[in-house]
Image (tube, rainbow, N blue to C red):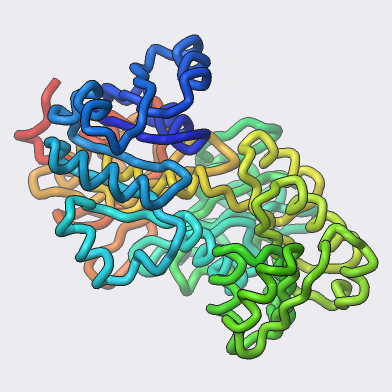
Length: 453
């Protein structure tokens, strides 16, 4: 696939890095010449310096040959214009990143579609929805829903005393003949692997599992987690993520929103009916104490500064907050933030990359989650008629090393993957795959007549 990525910073480069090596021809268009020279010195990606809204720059990038144009600059107007101009110049499919969730309204999306913008992605909106899902299942470290929640991906940290510790998957299966969940990956001592029946769970393992709604309670119990009821919340940061989260939760929960900028406080205070907006510096421990952080169920820090988010979450955790969620934009900080006690990390680069990456695969992908803790992705593939995955039962499939089928959605019914299950055409199949296995996994879901090589 010929892909052009228009960016002005780390998001574009992260997407390029993720897609690099998947047999795509990638060109990066960026206004910063020094930054592109640095990219060229470390990769073999083609780079072009210039304004992505300039027809000449896009023509130099061979826009007429582009299968996909991705515009992820910080300015949403530039992204929309880049996509519209690119479409007129011959790009087959265009994606624009926006920060204002209002652009996701159906009538607005249809307007931009008529102008040549095929898809709009709002990382801020996805992040806010992700936070809300995490508060509904507060015992989990990470959650991602497939097919409207008929299957979900959970990440659990196995603490001391968890019932599954020192038990194998086979032993757990004997205790629970009907399992509504399945472990699909374990991160242990910074190494990730797909577990087999004889692998034991150990203390401090991070476990990714696919679960049906009816399996969540048992999954949490085995993981040693107690359900946490969320009533009282502090949100730090009155930007789009903080405001959207507060708006969606404010009618039913007690929310305090702390914002450092006084002018922004004056603007956003009218956005809420019940949410208390506080002008102050959340890094001030005395302020947190005054606002009763010791009685807070969830503390959410989503300012534009990763260090502030990490620091305030650490303060809140030490003072008694039950669950902490931090927006961390520097991917290198994610492991550090988790190791020092922050429950959940949100990263807009991974959110954007996961949303966009599903448009770059040969097989049909309806959902895609880039995992933040391990170098792997979880896909929701659509099994096509006459595709290899529909020809045999799961145990007899020639599944490549480095992937595992976790579950299947057939119309409105969900199934956990077991060896004797037969996948059928149009099933949606949830698969975890490490990068090396992705091309082979894709071939499993494409009609045999279309598989080349």
